[in-house]
Length: 362
Image (cartoon, rainbow, N blue to C red):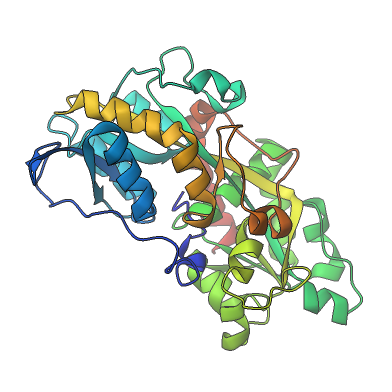
C-alpha cells in the first residue's frame, strides 16, 4: 500500500518498538550462505518493518535468516519484480495489494503455494484461492480522517459518508491525495467508483471539486502539512480538518504519548473507507523455494501477525492474532468498506486515473 500509514506516521513512535529488517545487498538475487547459515530473501516496498525479535524467532524456528530487499513504493516494487522475473531478486515478494494484484498475476511472477493456516483466513481475502499464487497477509482501510477539535469547536458533526462530503457545510474542508501519484489517493478514487459506479463517479468528483476539495501530491503533504488534526499538522498549522488517510491513523497518533487521552485527536469516517489487502507470494525461479515457503508460513503465523499492527499499522488476516490495546481502543474498522475486484481495477485503473486527472486537476 504505499500502503503504509504511510506508515511513516508511526515511524517515530515505533522506533523504540520495531527495527528495520536486515537490508539485502542490491545484487544478491535470492538466497545465499551468510555467516554459516541459510538466508531467505524477502523483496518488499520501502515501508516493510518487522521487529528484530520477530525475525530472530523465524531464524530460531527454521534456521533461515531473513534478508530484506526494499524496492521503493508498492507500485515501483511490483514493477521491478515484473522486470526482473527472469532473474528474481529474492525468494518471496511481500506488499502487492489488491489495486496492483492483477498486474503481478498477469505477468506470472509467482508460483503456487498454499500456506499453512490459510484455511483460517476469510475467503473474501483470497481472490486467488483457486491457484494460491499469493497469500493474504494484512488489511488496511483508507478513509477520511477528521480533526475532532475542529468539529467540536465549530459545533458541526463530522461527515460519516461519501455523500456527506459534498454537502455545503463541509465546503473547503477536505484535502486528498493525487490519484495518479499516491496510493491512498488512488484508493479514495476507487472508493467513489465502487460507490457510484462507472456512470456516476465522475459526477461525484465534479460535486466534490465544486465543494472545494484540495488535491496534493502525496500522503505526507496532505496529512502532515495540510491536515489540522495530526500532531505534525498542528505544528505546520494546516487548516483542513478532513483528510484522506488510514483507519489506523488515530492509534499511530497516540502511540508515542506519555499520557494517552480518552480518545485520539483524530476520528475516522468509516462510511468512506476502501479496503486494501496486501499479499505475499513465492517468486517464480526463487533460489530458495523451501525457505520461501517457510517464510510465507511465518508471515501468516501469530508471531508475525501480532507484530504488524504496531510496526506497519495494518490489521492481521489471521483470526487468531490478537490486536494490541492501543489499536482496539483508538483505531477504527469499517464494517462495510468499499472494494473492487482486482481484475476490474486492472482493466480500468489507467483510464479511471486519466479521467480523474482531466476532471479534477485541470
